[in-house]
Length: 219
Image (cartoon, rainbow, N blue to C red; front, top):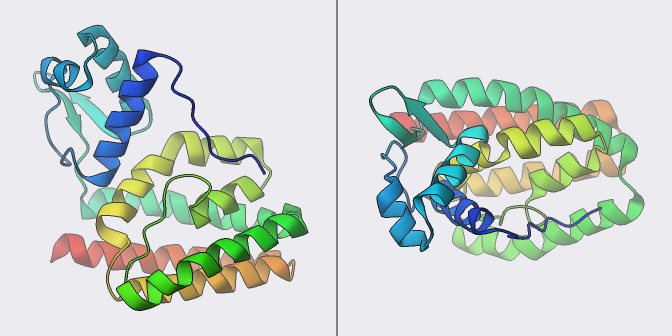
């Protein structure tokens, strides 16, 4: 499986990657207005470069434009969460089903190794932060589907908005132990090549995650 490596070739790439990470991690707050002038100073690039980066952020659903308001970071809302996770549950369920059919034995072994490397932090700190890409369990499953259309829809389309909810609201607290155990059960189903079980467990896992994040948003 290809590793997750994004090379910043242009100044726009660098600005885009920097701003995307800051939005996902909550450094730039959800719902906040984006000022091209301020961001160009912060990223040490021209306003034209920032404008292009903002366009790319809009394409991956992290930024929205409104008439007479300009560009804003999307707000994390219960309504937005429900709509996003309805799609996520369906698509990632399909990814798990296909991963059970298509992942190689080496890829499954690597997935188990990844989970084992994260287990201590989950148990001791109630923390389950996963870096974007190859260190992210869900990213590995998506790639393991070996379906180019599905990978594009999830990785290029929804992945970073989903991460925004997960990083800011879902990767710490009592729920992470259960989430980790659910990950282990999903990998076991994939190891057994039980595609129906893998899909059912993934869909249920995402539903539980949605309920957990929704409760935090409404508290």
